[in-house]
Amino acid sequence: MLYIFCPHCGSRSQNEFAYGGDATVKRPELNKEISDQEWNNFVYLRKSPRGKHLELWHHISGCRQWIKVERDTSTHEIFKTYKADELTE
Amino acid sequence: MQKYSVFSLIKNAFSDHQNWEVAWKDPTPKKEYDVIIIGGGGHGLATAYYLAKEHNITNVAIIEKGWIGGGNVGRNTTIIRSNYMHDDNALFSEFGMDLWRKMSQDLNYNVMFSPRGIINLAHSDAQMNAYSRRGNSMRLNGIDAVLLNREEVKKKIPMADFSDNVRFPIFGGLMQPSAGTARHDAVAWGYARQADSMGVDIIQNCEVTGFDVNNGKIVGVRTSRGDIKAKKVGLCVAGSTNILAEMLNMTLPIETHLLQACVSEPVKPLLDHVVTFGAGHFYCSQSDKGEMVMGGDLDGYNSYSQRGNLPTLQHVLTEGIAMFPFLSKLKMLRTWGGIMDMSMDGSPIIDKTHIDGLYLNCGWCYGGFKATPASGWTFAHTIAQDRVHELNSGYSLNRFNTGDLIDEKGLGTKTWIS
Image (cartoon, rainbow over all chains, first blue to last red; front, side):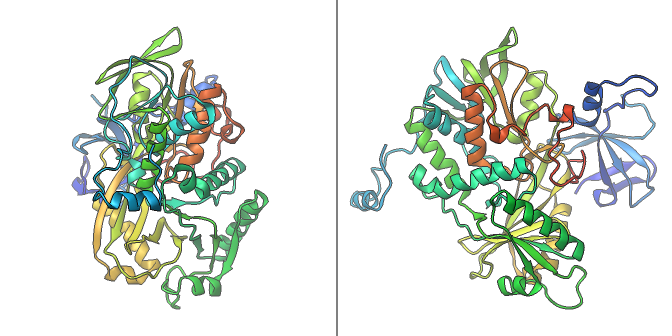
């Protein structure tokens, strides 16, 4: 069982959360010509690192806020959590 | 190579089975190979075997970080099927079914292929319609498919929950009678033994630490047991694909996720087929030892640990009990996990890359085991001829760029939900 520290509610079990994937992916800028390659990068390509991974989680059975979690993908250690709009280190 | 037969068994019985030849050697890596396959799992071993058998390329090494067959080929639920709707998947898998049927003879190794049939249960009229469409698509591609109504399902699996007051009543199901199971370890060992006998070097405990690329062409692999030159290199490393891709500065449409499976204590034979739950993600069959072999959802977040977490297991088994209430009475014998290369459309990639002489085989999601022979066969062709075969032409790396996705389930790019 993972315990995730929600910046709004405190430590909760993973059962309250839904996973939202890689938080470092950036949508191509609006009002600009976007190439197929840029769309491909945004929609499909993922680094999926072994080790530190910044990811989105949705506290769906809690405060319903999206948060960012920095977690190790091989040990599941959670280093830090952030509010969705908070800048990460 | 010693042929396995009833006569060799009797002969060796006289010497207390002490004089069997080793099944494969333990060579030190040579300086150079024509082809290096990275990953000594089912797909890598099959690729090496078909390179030697079909293309006469025997100066081949398989490099494996751990031991052969220690990854997903030893961790799956042994299901073999070709019940796909899309042509690319259907034709590829059905080609594989043919290889499965001949495998034990071909490899002189009993892989215990058991075509016991798979039944996908339907729990609504809409699902029956969808299965009817899928079944018709399968039959158009020459694959056997039978649509079963509720009574027919009840005859085949009477232990399923057919009571009146259930949340997901069984309306019927789609059956592929020629689908089945095989002994997964035997598949790895059989391919390894034959590949070894044809001259392939199987190098275990050898971790890849980097690649030598010169002018856009692969020239060798750096490993924990020294640098090895190679004209061609094939990647067959499933959940570890992204780790190697990073060494090559490639980003792939793949995420690595954890999938769990489990077996119950052994019980007397009661389930003749492979059965899947249609209102969730749960599948079940009974092994020859009598254990119920079960699996279901991914753990749901990127993971490289080969160990699962309990909430997912609980969720999966809840679905299992909804389908087969008797499961709640069984004790769990073992649970384990493996790391899956989840592609963004749920279909695999077998293709060349932008680096000359480097080939990619990944993205097998839930369906790697059943694809072992077809994947090895087509990957060997792709490597040997430096061009894809018709059978894997749809499994291109570029399809995400061009929009030619093979989205069998149409679930989008959230690999952890698909």
